[in-house]
Length: 216
Image (cartoon, rainbow, N blue to C red; front, side):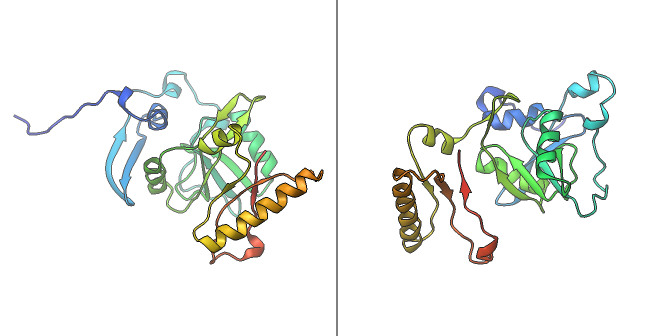
């Protein structure tokens, strides 16, 4: 008699962002669950992927071999549901130095991992899959392409907040707050510059390479 213990949990008890990633698992795909950077569990699909049942996969949706050499092109892996046309549009806007691939088609050596607002645990898990990638969280609302990924920051801005500051020290907060208030006064005088979401600057990064991120 086997000593193997099988646990079961209903999918309705899992976070929606985790369920979305599980739904996208194809045959042979795995989702690694990590704690403090260490993999503690693996989730794999027990059903065939939609692509398996739909026949041949279109060329633009085909899975790339992890060993494929992209040369000097920066590989952006998307961990959100984007159509092939949406990825192509993003890639075209970024220019010839970038290629945008679905996370299941991207190599583990991807340079950037674009994710929607998800839990810290899920981001940690994704980092184990793409250990070299710079993780970028994006809130998107593109009505033309039918894409909506909203998070807490967007909801706060929609509720009336004007500026979002991320500070690690009181002196840095004072600097950011003064900048935000001064900018607000400029807007009241008719200046059309947009307010910003401003993150704490990493002292290891050259300031000339840092760009504060505006929001719409």
